[in-house]
Image 1 (tube, rainbow, N blue to C red):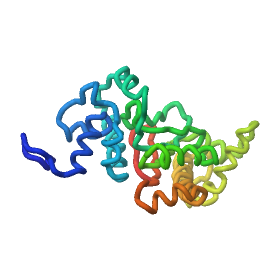
Image 2 (tube, rainbow, N blue to C red):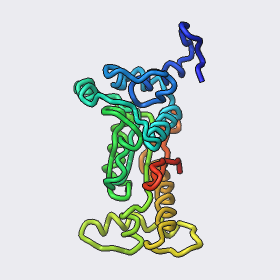
Image 3 (tube, rainbow, N blue to C red):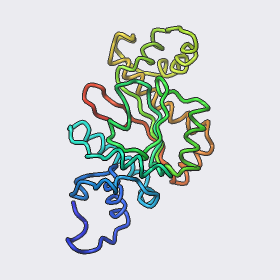
Length: 244
């Protein structure tokens, strides 16, 4: 839908921001109606800051829809690399899993400089992750904190099976509360994909509460409306991201 008539100036700041972010390669290609030229793919501070956190979440989900449909934005990776070499203005920070099948930048059709991404098995929250989130938001201006779990998560399976292996043992222990809190009527085992995914979604939801509880910085930013903290789930089979 076009809120502006052809050859007239658009006076809606939100609309202009979406157009700017679309031109940066993060937004809706259909909004601008044109493929972004290589020089316009770098996300600027002005384009990012003109968007609300909700608009950024919407644009991330739209990028995933392009990925799932097989219609990602054309990119000039070298232009993005060169354009961000002297500075960056990411719109979001993700906490996602190390799983090789779930690279956020690819599945959400993001370019270089569009998002920070902290990756750890099972997208577990720890002090280093919280510090990284605070850096990304309070110091660097990102407006969305998105925790992204995924289907068939090996870390969740390992926790359900009480797997033990060196330092991994302590990491998997972080998921025990989510396992206990997951309401599920079927077989509660790592061999049941539905239970594994249910635990993953519970873990994402609990992680949001943990972030707010353990980071007064992020909690305050969220209360002021400067940042949105949100959970999501990536389905390996369909390629689709949904909010949790």
